Image (cartoon, rainbow, N blue to C red; front, top):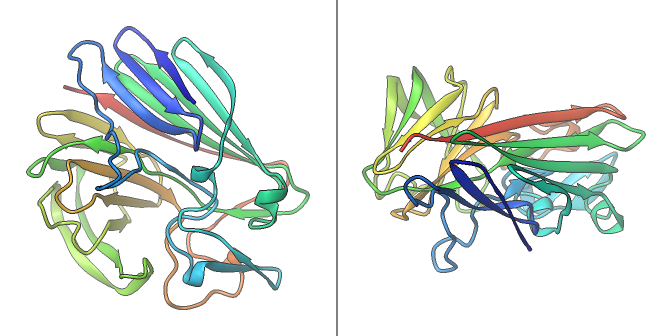
Length: 281
């Protein structure tokens, strides 16, 4: 079911299935800024990634010596969230662990997704609560897709010298890095930049970037340790993906607690992160 929030400048729709952002429109110019999803290109729009990001090696991980199966990008994007608030410019959705999630992810949790309009910006806050009596290991990330065109640019707020990691045909990280920016700010979206799949970047100095073209959006990703940038090659959108986690490599890991960029939360603990998309034009 779709739920709508709005303020003076923007209207926004969220699908309770996956708590997935469905629409972000300007009331001033009538533009839609969120990719509308097309099955023949990419059906997604803005999935929430939890409790893993990317692909696990053989779709499996281990915890305390037991094997578990988990699909790409985790469970949350395929489940229905409960709507606990939807009024005016704010909506909050909740997903709680149950028997079906515990079979694949052995932790009691609650995941909340809050969407709030402030001026010409949308703020999405993802909150993870450990409702278990043991330390919980998880990854969390966002995957919003914004309408754009080949030839548009992504401009970081600071000059960056970074490489990108890449995944192979099995969606696992390869043991090689590729130069991306050398004391530069700008990445051009070309028809083939995503041919080898996503750009996977860590070590950024910037906390935000701008997608610049016919539309212009300032995207704040804050302290996320990994930033994914992806689209189907040549498609009219780009995904900006702040991640607290990362794909597996071909080297097996014998416990989820040892997974790269894994987050740990003590019993009763809470983890929050937010991203913001501000409409510039």
